Amino acid sequence: MPYLPTIVLLAAGLVLLAILLVRTTRVLRGFRQTASMVATNTQDRAGLLRARSAALRVAFAQRRRKPENQ
Image (tube, rainbow, N blue to C red; front, side, top):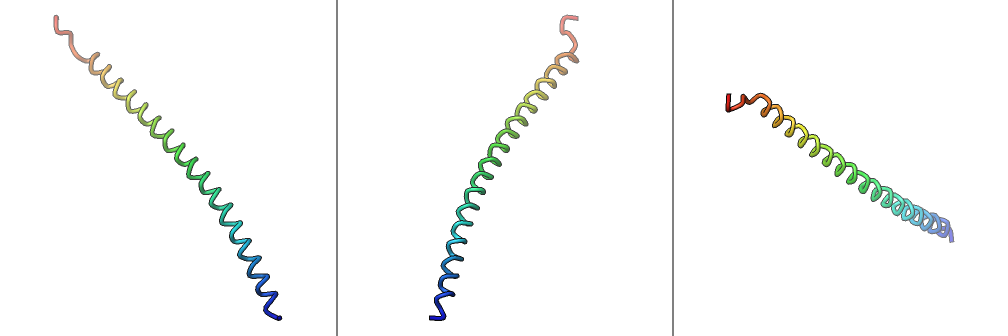
């Protein structure tokens, strides 16, 4: 039975591979969730920045406009 150590090593390698795949999948799932949160937060902040700059443009345009009754 010289093939028995080979089978045992193969089985141990497959178990180790399965454990590593499960752990890697969990880590990648957490990374994907974190990346999604960061992207959402960045988009929200960019939207607020665009809204503020648009409000400033409107305010400056109103200040530059000459009064109509003069």
